[in-house]
Image 1 (cartoon, one colour):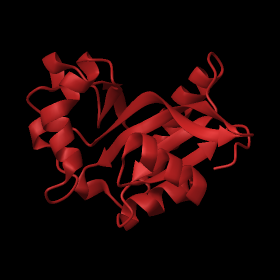
Image 2 (tube, helix red, strand yellow):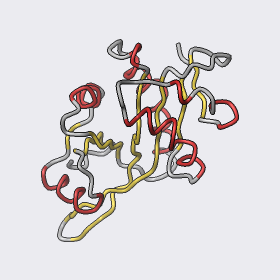
Image 3 (tube, one colour):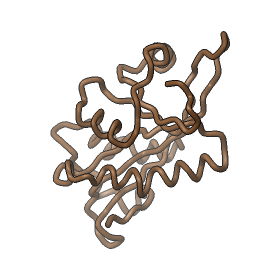
Image 4 (cartoon, helix red, strand yellow):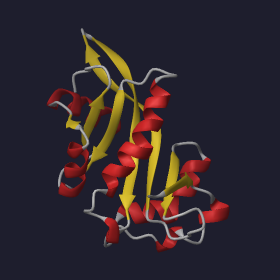
Amino acid sequence: MLHEEKLSSEKHFQSVGDFCCGADSPLDTFLSCQAFKYDEQRYGITYILTASEEEDEILGFYTLKTSGIQVEEDGEYNSIPVIEIARIAMNHSMQGQGIGKYVFYTYILPKIEKVADIVAVKGIIAFVEPDDEQAIGFYTSVGFQKATEDVQKEIEDSFNEKCDLYMVSFDNVEV
C-alpha cells in the first residue's frame, strides 16, 4: 500500500517542505527544518512513506530512536531500555482512515520487534501532549497505556517534558 524508505537529503530535500499533517503542526516543522540534522546526528532515524518508489509526495513519516526511562524499583533507580516513537504523522488528507495503524503494525512494530530480539528492549514509548486527543486516540488504539502517576513524575523530572508518557510493554513492566 505504501512505499517506505529512510529519509535522504538527496531524494527528499525538495518534498519535505510540501508535507502537511495539519495547520501549523510542529510535525511539519520537524520534517522540513530538523529531520535531516536529527538523522545526521544519529538522534533518530526518520522513515518517509510515499505511494510508490517513483513518487515524490510524502504521505507520512515516522521517526524512531532508542531511549531509556529511569524508574525506581526496590529502592534503586534503573534505566528501562525502550524504543521511542519520536514522531509519527500522516498527510492531512489521509488522516482518520486507519493508515496510521497500518503503518504502526506493518512498518514500525516489526522493526522494533527485530531490534528487541537482538538487544534488550522492554517496550515502546511515546510522549504525547495531554490535550492532543487525536494522538492519544491513536496510541491507545494500538495498545499503548498512559504511564502511572509515579512513572510520569519521574519522567517529568528527568526529561522535563510537558507531555504524558505512553508505553507498550514487552515484558509486563509496570507503567
